[in-house]
Image 1 (spheres, rainbow, N blue to C red):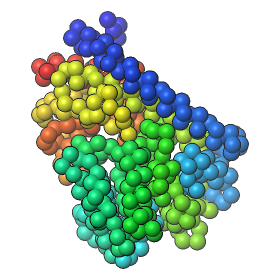
Image 2 (image 1 turned 90 degrees about the vertical axis):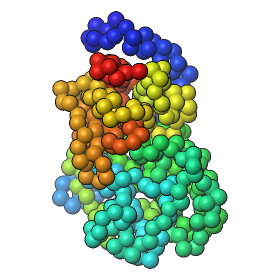
Image 3 (image 1 turned 180 degrees about the horizontal axis):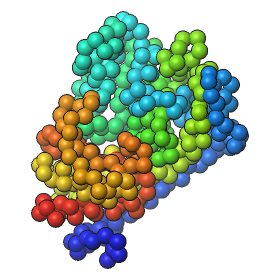
Image 4 (image 1 turned 120 degrees about the horizontal axis):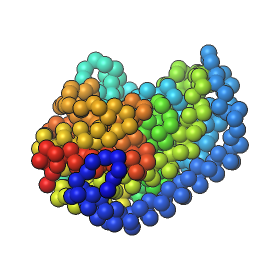
Length: 421
C-alpha cells in the first residue's frame, strides 16, 4: 500500500492493471525520447555551448552571442533554416500571432485546413471580436476546411480549397478542445505536398504546440515553412519560465523578427536579462520531459479506460501530441476529476478548482494546474470547458511518478463523491 496517500483497494488494484497495460507503449516512448535527446545533445556540441552563452545582456541587447547561438541550436534541432527563440514571447498565442502578422499582408488569404483553430486564436484571426487589430481588421481574408465526420483531415477538400488566392495554409497539430485526433508529422507532410502542388508559393505554417519531441521528426523536417510554439509547453522542458519559438525558412523567420521588435532592427535587439540559461537548459531537458508527459498520458488513458470511461487516444495508440482527453459524462464528475488532480499537485494542492469565466473562451472553464510556472502545460494540468460532452483535457507531467499519483487521487476523489464508475 502507498505509505503517503490514502487510496482504496479498488484504485490500487486498477493501478497495477494499468501499468501492465502500458508496458509496450512505454518502451516505444523510450525509443523516441532517446533519439530526440541525442539530437538535442548533438546540436549543443556542434554549436560549442559554454557558460559564456548564459551571460545576461541589458538595454538594447546588441551582440548577445547567447541569444544568437540559441537560435542556431534550435534551428539545427528542428531541421530548419532559422529560428527565433525569445523569453519575451508572452504565450503560445502571442508567438503564433507574431508569425501570422509577420508574414501575412493586406489582401492575403489564410486557409486553416484543420477546421476552426483553438479558441484563443479566434480574436487574432478576426473570427470573433471587433476593432482589436485582428488579421481581418488589416484586410487579410480567412477561410477554413472542415474536418470530416470522423474528425480527420479531408485531403480532397484541402486539395480543392488551395489555389492561387491562398497565401498561407495553416495547420493546428494538436486537438485543442476537440475530440479529433492530433496530427502526425506524416500527415503534415502530406498536407504540405498537396498544398505546394496546387500553389508552389503557398506558406505552410504549423501551430506546433504540444507536439514538440513527441515524434522523431518535426514539421519543419516535413515540408512546413514555419512552425511555432510555447516554451511553457513541451519545448521548454519545464525549465523555461516564459517564452516562445518560431522556426522555419530564413526569410520568413526574419519577417517574424521584424514583427516582434520593429522593421529594420528585428532580431538584432532584445536584452536577454539572464534568461538564456533557462532557455538552453529547458531545451536540453525537453525530450526527456516530453517522454515523461507521454507516459503520464498513456497511464491516465489506461487507468480510466479500465474504470469504464471513454478516452482518446486509447492507451495503446501512437500519439502525436501530449494531450489526453477523458470523457467524464457530466459536470459534477468533470469538476471532481480536476479537483482530484489539483489535490496531488506540488503547488497549491489545497486549492479547490471551480469553473470560471476565462479570457479567450466562450464558456466557463475548470482548470487544475498546480504548477511551478503559472499556466505551464508541460507540468500536469487538467482543464475543460463546462459544456457537452464534458471531456477533460489533460496534458503534461514533469515526471511520470508524480503525475501517476495525481491520476490516482483524481480517481479517489471521484470515488469519495460516489461518482467513479
